[in-house]
Length: 83
Figure (tube, rainbow, N blue to C red):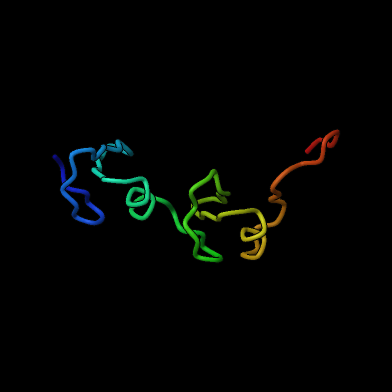
């Protein structure tokens, strides 16, 4: 068994996440998200999908990125348009 680094649960079905040269142990995806997911710099939600990155800044969507002054970021491009 291994101890979850987020909640401290000693669980027989824990798992490891290898990221950026470190190894993390969790008992659930919820704990992994709580510990590792970046936080949107506009609304504060955890970014659990692709999100949007502008330089070193992370946002959950293009709207939040634009609200922080990052122009030209869109969630999708209409079919037939080049960009």
